Every structure is written in C-alpha cells, then in structure tokens.
Length: 244
Image (cartoon, rainbow, N blue to C red; front, side):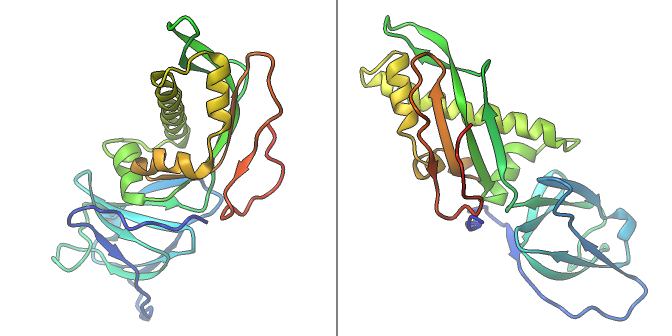
C-alpha cells in the first residue's frame, strides 16, 4: 500500500488514537467494510447525538470528518473513541464521516474507442485512439477530498471513477502536448512518449489530486502497435502480468 503523505491543509486535525471501550449502553462500535467500495458514506452523526462512537479503522482505511461541507479532521487506522454532541470538545451532531479505502486500487482501462488529443505531423490537433491501463491509490486523503468529493451532494463511486478517469487522461494529454511543444509531434512520437512513462513520473503528475500511480501502460492504437511496455512500482502488492 502506498504511504499516506501528510497533507498540507491549514487547520486540519489528523488523529490516530487507541482508547479503551467503556462498558456503557450508549456506545456504538462502527467499522468499515473492505468490500463496500473505494468511498463509503457519508455517515450522518445526528442520530448519535449524546452517544459515544468507537470508530475502528483497519490498515488502508481512513475517515474524513466533514462539517458544513468543510473537511475538519482525518482519522487514521486505529480505534477512535469519540463522543457526539454540542460540547466544543466533541464531534458535533451536524457533522458527517466519509470513509476512504487507501489500499483499494483505482483501476482504469482504456480499449478501442478511448482517445486523447494529440498534435499531428501537420501541426494540427486531432484525437488519437489509445489503449492501455493505469492503476492508482489514494495517497493524500485531504487533496483527494478537495478534488473529487468537496461539494458533492451524493457520493457515487461510478461518478467518482469517471472523474478520475477524465483527469488521468487529461494529464496524459498534457504530457503528449509537452512533447509536441518541444517539436515532437505525430502519433508515432505520442506513442514513444507514452510508452516511456513510468509510475514514478506519472505520480508526480497526479500528486496534487491525492493520487499515486502504481502501474501504467499506455500506447496509441494506430498500427503498428509495438509490444506492450509494462511498468510497475515495487510497492504495489498485485504483481503479475501487466498486459491489457
């Protein structure tokens, strides 16, 4: 799993605590299902008013505390003993919890019909079909929230994945455009640049969005297509065939 980097977010509390569960009937234990999706929630805290919440987060799970559409705190893996109420030292009942699975891979696959904007040999922009795949992890929870979840009324994973896919392809277009700006154009040059792309390099492109690239293999679908060039990052635990 990629390491969760410390987000530079002014006033944001990052909490990691382990506390003893009291023998109290007002206590509710809450855990996150690894099988329920990349983004889960929101959990409204209103129904827990006056109660205690024991939030159990496994490795690869984080919880975001949202209030008035602002991100107030991040809870890292561990057991968090929290009280919900109007007291300034507790979670307020008008807050929500959103859960992220930072160990769940975001897998993007591009087959026939997927295209990027590229500069042709004639210097004109056109759409070029591409095939390939890219796998990412959530690496910066606060940045991920800001880019993909802030202001979203209903969190739908299908929609979020579409937004991530569009963003990743826009970064690929920017890389190809940069190559064109250096006087290198055409489908052949685009394919050469894309097949040279490494997970480490592409992670730098995605860092501001709270994403880390752990696998990438992209090339234009225009014949002749060379054998796939596979690149994997050593920290990714799903090693194996990188073919499409």
